[in-house]
Length: 262
Image (cartoon, rainbow, N blue to C red; front, side, top):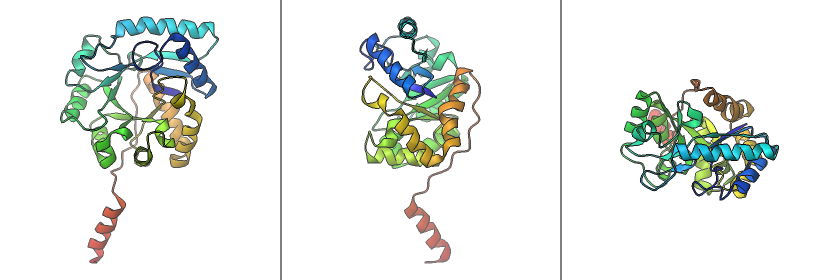
């Protein structure tokens, strides 16, 4: 199992406060069957976040500490980059990192709106050979209202990462319902804990996997937690199933009534 979204890197964002906490997060992850953690510290343009060079040094210290503690989890570098028109520039200047220096970049959307330039950014990244992975789309209110927004992003070449804790109601019923819809409609390709500490989110990995397996089955779960993340590790192309458009139940009924003339 591989966690592609974690704030385990200490003292660089609102995640682990110190290396001891980061070590404990890795210990818990290993106990839950996680083999690889992608450290994805926040990067918001103009907010003073640390760049890739700094984060690499912190990562090296963390992996050394894990060796000392005999923890077998490997932590790799990435970022969770808040979407901006300058995202390609940030990559080219070394401010932000793709996941393990691969073609895959974790991109965060605002929670309460959808930037008008989002599709343009996806297109621009794809032209550069970068595959954007949308972080926790189930938490974006616009996607909650219309899951087909994510459908269009995927058709443009983006992928998507689900927070496991969304499936157990951590963020509320609306987010949970949206997570289930996205899973059922082939719009989720990776999982992440989005863990910020050794408490709460980091402790619910097994429970989240169990819920996911009930929704899409073990074969699909294996694809999401093992097969696709391994493609990131090896910087390989991921062949995904065609996403399915979401049609609300009320809309289906209206269409059927129109067909039968009722």
